[in-house]
Amino acid sequence: MLKRAAYWIGVLVFTYLSVGFQQPNNYDINAKVKAVYLYNFTRYFEWPDNTKSTTFVIQVVGKNDALIAELAILAGKKKVGSKSLEIKNTETYNAQIMSNVVFLLPENAKLLKDLSSKLKGKGCLLVSESVGGAKQGASINFVVVDNKQKFEYSKSNAIRLGLKTSEDFQALAIPVD
Image (cartoon, rainbow, N blue to C red; front, side, top):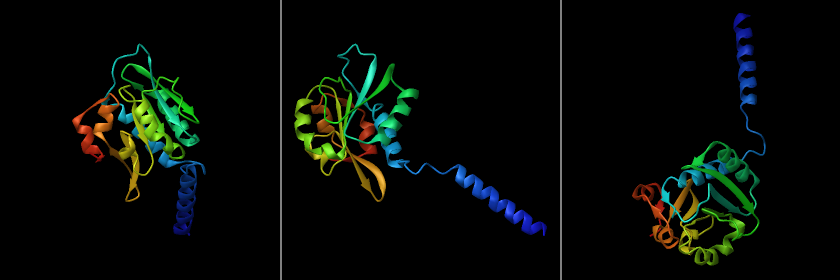
C-alpha cells in the first residue's frame, strides 16, 4: 500500500512539475535563439564612432512577433557597450532609422542586394535569413544545419559595409569567403 501511494505521489509531482515548466503554445524557441545570436553578434564587430547616439539600434524588417518580444526582453536587460539597446520593427526597410544592425526576415529577402549597396560603408551589420543571403550581400545569414541554428559569415561583406570584426568570429561561423 505504501509503495502504491509513493508511486502515485511521484506521478502527481512529476505531472505538476512538467505542466509548470511547459512553454506557452505560441513559444518560439528559434526566436529566442536568433535574438541571443543577434545580441551576441554585437560583441564581435567594431562600429565606426560616427554618431553621438546613446542607443544601439537593431531594425528587424518583417513580421515575427516572437522574435521582437525576445529582443525586447534582451533590450530591457542588456547594453551594447555603454549604449542602451533599442529594437525597431518595420514592415519594409526604413532608411530614416539610424540602425547599427538590420535583420531582413525571409519575406524581405528580395531587398537584400539593393540594401547591401545602400548600406555600403555606413557601418551597419546586415543580417539575413534566406538561401544564399551571404552571397547576395549580407554579412551574416542564418541557416539550419543538422536541425541546429547556425550562421554563414562573409567577412568581405562586413568590410564593404564599413565594419571591423574579430578574427575569432570567423571560427564560430560557416565562412562564405
